[in-house]
Image 1 (spheres, rainbow, N blue to C red):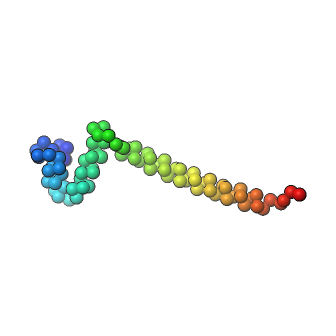
Image 2: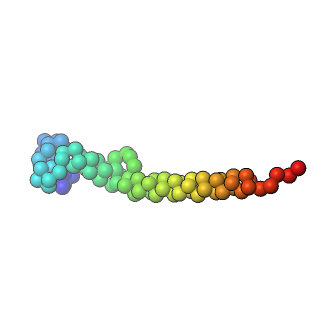
Image 3: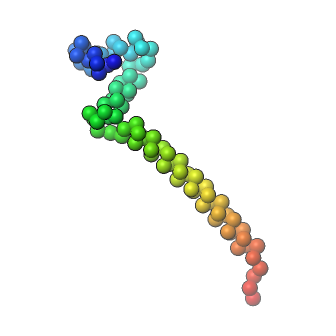
Length: 87
């Protein structure tokens, strides 16, 4: 809405100030949404929404892998402690 009607206002900030109350959100939220929309469309540098989602997914996978490694490490450490000593 902001990008479509920006030409009707003095500048983008004025458009955001006018439109935010009409759609029931804060100016800062609307400003961020507009900026993210421009990034997603390739008009501005930054992380796209798809990239952010992929990074979150990869971080989740890394946390899961780390948990598996911790459990395996504890299992093998316990097995080593339970093993009879060689003399």
